[in-house]
Amino acid sequence: MATIALDGLVKQYGKATVVHGIDLHVSDGEFVVLVGPSGCGKSTTLRMIAGLEDISGGTIKIDGRVVNEAEPKDRNIAMVFQNYAIYPHMSVAQNIGFGLYTSKLPEVEKKKRIAETARILGLESLLDRRPSQLSGGQRQRVAIGRAMVRNPAAFLFDEPLSNLDAQLRTQMRLEIKKLHQRLGTTIVFVTHDQVEAMTMADRIVVMRDGRILQVGTPMELYDNPADVFTARFIGSPTMNILSARLAERAGHYSAELKGVGATVSLATSNPAGMIGADVLVGVRPHDLVVGLAGEGGLTLKGQVAVVEPLGSETLVHLDVGGTSIIASAPGKTIPKVSEQISVHASPGSLYLFDAKSERALCRM
Image 1 (tube, helix red, strand yellow):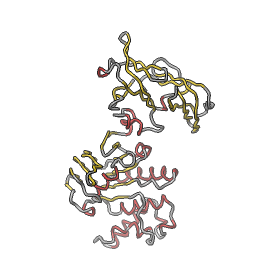
Image 2: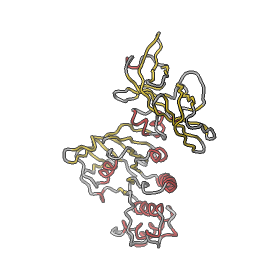
Image 3: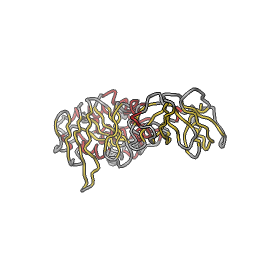
Image 4: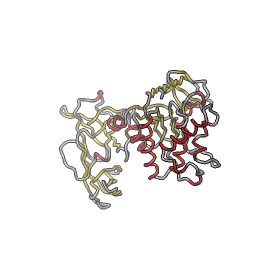
């Protein structure tokens, strides 16, 4: 196992900077997920750690050793790619053992490692098959096995589940999580899917435009997002964001929502001296509940535009004064399209952001 440390890591292509001096420390045995939209620099960062991309500035340390100039084979890490990259003319056993063929291990030890890796991944009965005879999930396990068999200090995964269907993605998420729990090896995992990040990571690194916005456990990012981008990216469905203006009347502070005819009281005093300033109020769909009543918080009335029954809950898309929001209802509660309904979010479930910087201010 190994620690991985990035200090001021920069990547440039000509005059274009795609990674802007990021700092990140991955602890020994930690499962860290880099998440963000396409083009945010997460895969480039992973490839720099692997040695597949030259770095333009900063340092990369693996187990305390600077590896800026080290060849990929000398970094004692293994990478699993999005497209599996397994050889179609080789059997499963040959693919798993490919990385051992040039090693000086005795043949008996090589076969032992291949057999043990196949056992862990549930591939024992498939060792003689070719990749064309395997399902997508089985091929991905072969790719993981080829990385595992070398006993690397760390695994790097570059969107390994993106080519799988929904059911297989769920299955492979569990497989990789179980594998990490069993082996305890350091893992850096790249994805654009926040569900993968939330369900697999010890810590999530949210990236945007080549910069790190926030690092924390899944629930830290979900409960306390540092900015609007993180608030909307972490959590599904995405957080509702409503424009508002801070106001003060008779010593009471509130956020007056624009265009929806609602006001939210602030439990705190004048936040950062911003009375009269434009702000953003955030509320997650699961906290904005159809038919819920209560004092304080936020109540909105709107017309049902779309209904999405999901079994355990129903997502309700509302038009509130020309603003589209998403609310939640119990699974068997299915409002009718065009029906006028009320939705309510309890105090403490609302988020306040500065409209200009989009940074978080407080909870409401």
